[in-house]
Image (cartoon, rainbow, N blue to C red):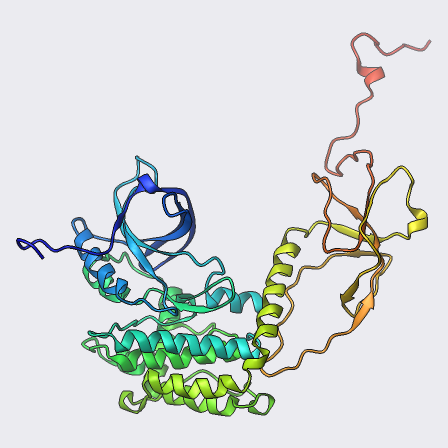
Length: 433
């Protein structure tokens, strides 16, 4: 500090080095954009903040605090953003520049799987979140998250978990201007808030606040569900201080080794009394012991989930594709054909029907502790694909695709054809005597 001027280590990022702004989400603190940093040669996330005029320095001080949180299990803060999203007509806005994680959040993953993640992957996520939170709590001064939930846990390409939005509660105190939240948003936040925070408006947050939220987060990972789903926020606010917690009836501890110990830790984390909750260091030790029992299956679990996510992405792009069986001997010699090899071995238990519509409902992930069993059968390599507005699609290797040009067909909603011979002005209709 020189002459009373504060020097910041966090750089200010402006529009002159950002390109390709794309809105990817929003939250209570503002909108989130994906952008390309032309000098760094990488994509970044720009989190805009609802802020009062003249508060950019406050955001920079908070970014400086978050910049100190350099850990592999927390999202890195790369700088402070000041700009107009590349549009001179927009007002000047302030925000944070963060590393961009393309896999989205844990909340997104749970929704896409419609089930809990496989055992080893679920335990690794739980361990990584506890490691990240323990790091934040061990800083001097400690950083309290105060909004730990699945949407604030982001995933890398290999599904490693990283905590985001830590410290933004302090940013909100200084620079955020709330315009109000609806009951749904409030209910989502209330689900992860401890009872003591709901009982008094003068409550002063502590580390135990985050530990309680972590206990609810563990429940979401184990069950793949959102706590108190469909319950009004006013009832959630009323019942949590009375001791209500997410339902454990659907969790079968006999299916997975160590799951009973994980449930015990989870209930300790959401204990009614803050002083009885464990520290995050205690959580790290407990989950490490459980994760070690299943770590050998991690690569298979990650591969299975990534494969399912890829299948869902392919499926969503082929919703209108018609697939029908067609033996080789029926292929017209004039058809365009591309044969890449013998019939492949595919993991499936279904046979071809004469004409089928490709279904795109997401596959349910196996329950925690389930052992994968696969049936293999040989698929017919000759498949006819009828498409519209595309040249061709090939999925997988070692298969053949026959592409046939067909005449255009009139859509059922189009008007009937016009008789050009009877209506053309040069050929008036003949009158018959």
